[in-house]
Image 1 (tube, rainbow, N blue to C red):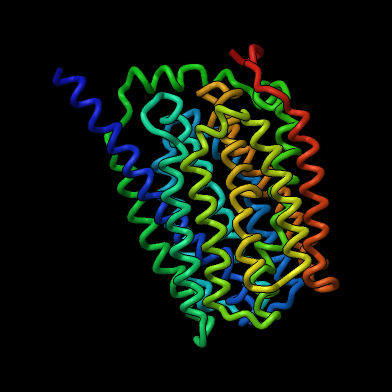
Image 2 (tube, rainbow, N blue to C red):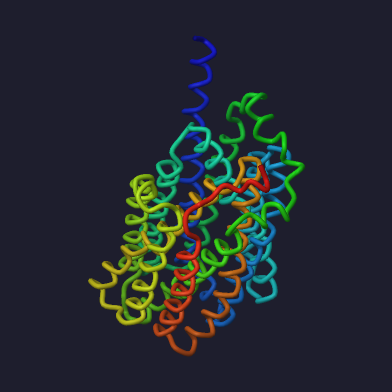
Amino acid sequence: MPLSTGDAAPRGDEARRLAVAYVALFFLAGVHLPYWPVWLASRGVDAQQLGVLLGIGNWARLTTPWIGAWADRTGRGPQLLVAVALVVLVALGLFELAHALPILVALSAVLGLAYAPIIPLLDGMSITAAAAGRMDYGRVRLWGSASFILASVVGGWLLQGRDAALVLTTLQSAAVVLVLAVVWLRRMPAVPRTERAITHRAAPSRSWAEILGQPRFATFLVCVGFLQGAHAVLYGFGTKHWQQAGISESTIGWFWGVGVIAEVALFAWGARIIAWVGAPGLLGLAGLGAIVRWAALGSTTAIGPTFAIQILHAASFAAMHLGAMSWIRDNIVPDAVNRATAVYTAIAGGVALGIGMPLGGVLFDRWHGDAYFAMAAFAAIGTAFAWRLGRPTPAPSVR
């Protein structure tokens, strides 16, 4: 009995600490995603330069597969989280001194390299815990989404009639909280030696060829790449587009917040939806919702319809991400989860958005809101590949 009780407490603590880490991370993201372009514009950056600066941060995610491999091999992901969170904090501090474009480029690269591993490492830890039955991934991850909502609304309030410099100050404060959260996660009681041995015993034998060569993995990566890449115009230029339409910053904050409220609802009910349609089916539904969302955003900036359209964030992002995590859970062996999650992040958040952001800058500069129609075409391609995935199957070649 004492052993059983002692084992249960750390497991509950694991879910709480991961939830706090997600809250800290996504509060930072909830300010950074919608309002970082506003701060960069205050430094004289135009639309095409903005696309390049945002793209640099996404290309940095290409490093995450090697970071995931190291985490799989050593089991030291929590220690790495502390290190990269500290670099994020330092980089945001140095942005105070950045005015010239080359310095902004260099700091964007550093920030991107440090930020890139955080989500896949947290997701890898969470998926591993969920696969072992210690927690429900969606119900822990939704706390991050709730934090994003708060941050986007707070960011809109900060910008309303105020200097854009407050965006950077808020991000710096959020980075301090993130460091404290991952330090707390790092101090969590270790996984029992026997469980850790089972998880990592075979890790050195897993080659990249074995992981990347699993059935349908290439199809999966193309699917999520196009679905995530289709968010480029919204992520890079959505706030600017709405500002140009005369919409207040506080209302824009709620545009972002409403979308993530829908995301939270999807994560809360995601397990039931996956049980019904499966991971490939959820990815297909994500694609269909994305096509509608981008076409609609390209057609109107009216406040009422835009609020309704933003609910489709539950499809275009949340269903896509939860479907991707579920597909990895169903098709990747436990000792390769960090690497598979990192490859997903590198392709969807790195290559796709790394190309999509500069492209979005060119399209927005020329077409303004009509650039969303190109994003609808991206989503249609991703949807076609989602339907090709079919039902998940075991991967005997790596077992």
